[in-house]
Each structure stands twice: as structure tokens, then as C-alpha cells.
Length: 402
Image 1 (cartoon, rainbow, N blue to C red):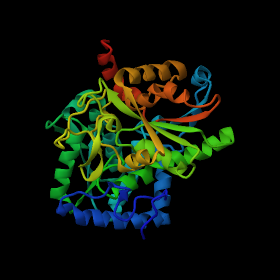
Image 2: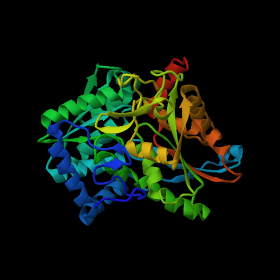
Image 3: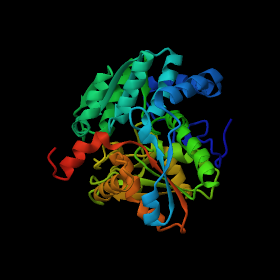
């Protein structure tokens, strides 16, 4: 059944959010995607599947994650600032929510081999963790530049039994890892499931990943109503592919008084190739299985990107975010490297929480967002991951020898 344009349950039956999304893949992958769509449709309604997922999220991942009142930041900005603590999940980020869900789906499909891509390494670690737990074979593709930036996570994946394959093509970052993972899947589709780590790629991935990550927003909704007696004024999250943000936003979709704000990576400058802000410098295009905003030149060639955070260093953005932005339902701000580092130090020194460099982009625009709200407004900021993985890279960037 075709869903209405205004429904919070988009995409429609073709996998589109307005003109975004869809399924742009080689013919070889169409049967696998059809199979995945059918299996996921059944799993969504299967009480046994949902109970097993819920049990693992509670007993293995450690959900629900706390909603922490940021007292010092609240005094500083004159607002009620709450932090959704995805950094306290097992493996240190929100990525495990989706990895566990998709690994259970792979078991349901009879697939015994898993492949994944990773940028910051957190999705790779989460996938390797889920595979170890469920007895699945795991291969993770990662750009060699990201492997350098995230060496501790590479070692963690290997400790968990995963094979980590370095990708030397292109910019040696996330988009190149996705390309290699897609090539693998084309040649191994019969026994392999590809666990995409963000709310992007061909249908049904943007919807499926969003649904697995919506546990973030469901918990936050209940927690803030208990703590404050009402819904928040603003939800704020960093946006790479966009899974942590859409997971927070989606359960509030019909609450039009709740503003959605995403923070993209402004990198080191406004010129193409110097940042990863798709809405600031991108145009409509098709990339890695979907239609969305893409950082590309006048000839439609995808350009290189830069961000201090490997997880935001990606040339496109999830199609639901593109749709939300065009409709005016969400606003997306740009946070450059320097401002993100300032945000990281601010949260660490104010609240005793060292966020991932990705999450630091949300903190980096917090002052700007607060300036657009009334005094004592309520904000929820998604701390999507912890900064342990980034300590060496931060030190290198700041010229500190460890």
C-alpha cells in the first residue's frame, strides 16, 4: 500500500522519501534486496523476533541508555540541556543497535557470512561484536586513511574475530570502503548479508536502519516527559550518513513543535573537497544505491571530502534527511573542525564526558542553536559515541605527543 507523503512511516513502497532514496543497484543485487524487504516486513511484525532483539538490547547492549542533565552547560547557556548517552552502549556508540538487529535478520535469512563498511570504526566494531555473539563470519572494509585515524578500533575488530580489509582506492575513506563492500556483495550474495551502518544505501536500508535506531528517540521521549513533564523544544545530533540523528528524530516526527537540528562536518573550508557538508555544497544526484544530496562537481563526479571525524567524512547523506530538509522539517548546520574540537573540550571540561569527534560536532553548534531558542528551552543532544577511539587523533591534531 502506498503511504501518504506526510506519513511518519515513509518511505513509500518504492523506497522513496519524496524524490530521494530508491534502489540503484546492479541487477545481481535485486533478488537479495527483494528477499531482505520481505524478511524485514515479517520481522517487524514478529513478536518473537522483536522480543529477541529487545532482550539483546537490554541484556547485551545495556539499554536503555541514560538521559543525563548537563548542569554546567545548562547554566552556561540558560537552557535545559539533556544528553542522550549512546556513548554508554556496549562498544561505545549507537551503531550496536542496528548491527544486532541486522545480524538477527541475517540469521533469519540463513546467511552465515556478514560484510560491513566502516569509517570511524564504531560500526565495524559493532558488527564484529554482533557476529561474535551470534556465530557469524565477519569481514569489514575500511579505508586505509581511516584505519590510520582509528587504529584502536581496527585492533578491536580483529580481537573480535573479524577480518579487516584495508581499501587503498580513491580517498582511502568511507565512500571507498562502501564501494569495496558492494563489490564483495555482488559476488557473494547467495550466502552473504551486507550490514550497512547508516541510514543510507538502496531500499530497504534507510528505513530499516532508521527503525533499528529509533530506540534512541523512543527512550528519549519517555525519559524527557518523566524528567521535564513535556516534550523538548529541540533535538540536536551530528549527521554523517544520519543514523543516530534519524533514530533520535523519528519518534518525534509528528510532534511539529519539536525542532530537529543536524550538524554536518564543515571540515577546514567551504571549497569542494575541504568539507563533508552535503547541504552546504552538494546537489541532487545518485550515489551508492540511492538518490540524495551528493558532493559532486559540475560533471557529476563525486569529489573528495574532509572531516576531522572519520564517521562524518562521507560524500552523501541519508535520503530521509534530504527529504526532511527540503520540507523544512529539519535544519542542518555546518560545524568545522576547529569548532568541533572546541565542542569536544567544552563537554569534557564542563560535564566530564569525552564525546566522539562525530558527536562533538553537535556540541560545536550548541551555542548557535541555543541562541535561536527562548530562555529555559529544553534541548536533547545525542552523544552518539564516546571519544576513546579519537584520543590519539586529537592529540596529533593538537600537536601533543602521547
